[in-house]
Image 1: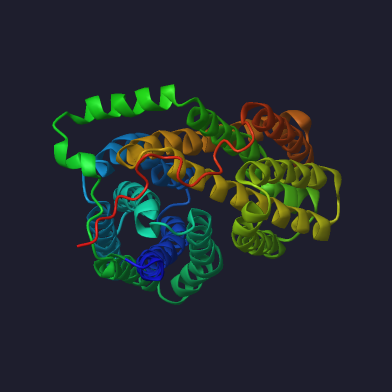
Image 2: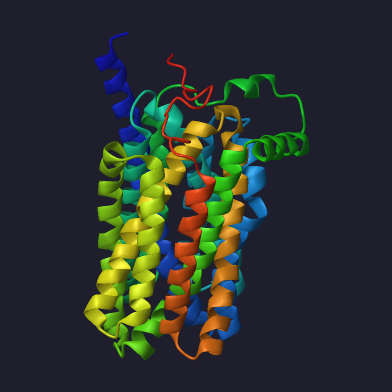
Length: 419
């Protein structure tokens, strides 16, 4: 088969996956605003409101590992279709309850929990589908496009649409959310072929044994294990400051609540720039160089935010952080795709996400303690920035040059079988 034909087929498959991801991320963005707004209309208890956020996050801690093992057994496209279908039904049911005036805070909790479990499957499936969908194409380019759809859907479109439509008619954002997930499921029907790992056809062991197999492989792969530790460290250290962003903007920079939205907007712009530049930077330098430079830029951005009192400079530096961390995430995602065998990718991703997502609430809690102890959110940003320089140093000494720059590093990258 001619190379141009293979490339066109890969591009077509990637477009189907990105279209589905765009629809589901738009739904995610709407839901992340609409559900808290709905909760506030039902209760003003701060513990119940905070508990909703924890409930939305809980499935990643409880289900990322078993979901990864399941994705190494089943057709990942079908799993993604089913998960998006479940999300569409649950959110649609919530819309009906809101319209009927019969929703309670506990129903909101239950819906958020079910949606969260389905989200773990859908997002993980989209990630592990990338190598099979791309084929011989660029993993860096595919990962950057996936990051861009997430940023646009959740930051630029989903949030504003969710808040605006909720103000007009409380049921409306949930209807839009449900439709978005339904479209995400239907679009994937166009993604032809089988996306079931080859080894899944021979799977006879239970999930516990398969999870143990994934842990053994990860323990033996020093490079991937170091990347997991690095990703977790970046997540933990950067969340020290990110959790304090609202206090930094309002209390330290003296911005209004309305002006605080500028930080989210600038962060979104920075994230898109990072997604656009990452493949070019990798091509010009190397993945290791982008990873080291990106982590150092994150440190420089937060250090600068801790030292400046200018709102314009603070917002610009936050945009730099967003661009750098997205570039780092793209490099780490591509490294994971190239280094992990396809039949283990789901399980390794489950471990990876458990570590990275598990570090977020820990970092947020430590950030609050740090701000209380230091007396200023700016000092927390400064501390976080300096620690990120330390993480960059760890990456420099632990990752040898060229360690993960070869896209053929894994024995079985392409799982897709044309039928």
